[in-house]
Amino acid sequence: MIQLKANGKIFEGWLTAHVTRSLAAISGSFEISYTDRWSGQGEKWQLKAGDECELSYKGQPIIKGYIDAISTSYTGTSRSLSVRGRDKTGDLVDSSNLSDAKEFKGKSLKDMASTLASPFGVSVAARCSGASAPIEKVSIQQNETVWETIDRLAKYQGVLAYPDAKGGLILNEVSSEVSESLVEGENILSCSVEQNETEKFNTYMVIASTSDPDEKHKTAIAKVTDSSVKRPRLKTLLTHKAITKDEALERAKWEMAQKISKSLNINISCSDWIHSRKKIWEINSIVSVKAPACGVNGLFLIEETKFVCDENGLKTELKLVLKEAYKPKPDRSKETLGEFGGV
Image (cartoon, rainbow, N blue to C red; front, side, top):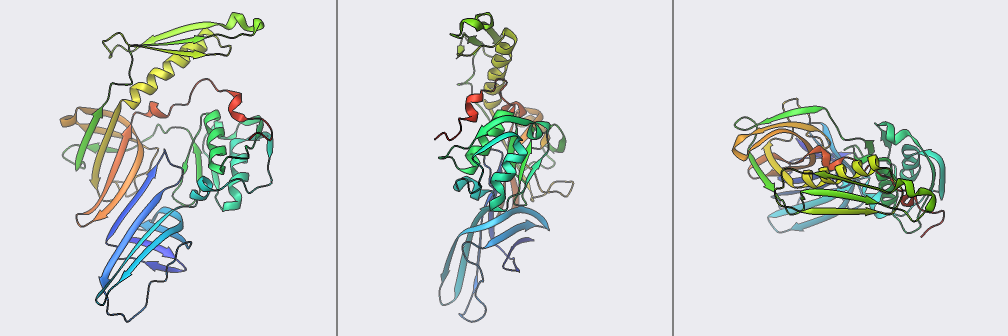
């Protein structure tokens, strides 16, 4: 059921597999292995590092990219093979810009990402308005990798960028659609919850000021309070650009939401690699969780999926976070767009 397609052939019968996809990584990765009894006769594995490949489960794609590394060993009675690889988008992480583009004017994030990713055979799909909105001017930093450039622009536009399991790149906003329910005693094998209060504060205060005499009227102070933190802990944020009080308030709210969302981490494992709708578990999906033994009841975002196959069978490990963890920052600085020819 786990198949690796390469060089026009399908390889299956893998004994172990570990596949990871994450919103925090632009490229999914996999490692699969196989061992059998072998007398030295018969066909050898026709796989090598650098081969283009597709990894799928029950016909559903999970990774489309390249084999990064292969480890093989042989004895008189057995042979073993381990294969590691990544999505095509892995090349965007490693390589500098190969296109002729040095500067973009009035282009959308989708247009720019497509130009930068095209030499690597990576398609780009825009699924939100922020990915299609034009940006006045953008320069390519000479010391950046392709992914660093795309990531910089995506953050400026408040857009998520993540792999699509088919060798492409998706530009999207945080999902709001509930894709599946996870219920204790039904489809949850295990659940663990970590609550960490060290980065949370009782009060978040934004102080905005500018040295520009024409912008003094925009000096602002705003604060918000997290009632769940009982101790008098204060987080002060300084911004040296002109913003209104409402903008300062939104910045304070965003900071508080970030700290709250990142204080809670949930890990849930369930059987198989597909859910009740017969689909592979997808990152950037919302799930409803009811796990009273861990005190969890609500909607959460799938940040990471780990598909595991070992001697205990197949399971999926889901890392869940509050969707506010990926809420875009409200104040965007044009400094992130760089200067033409900047290094």
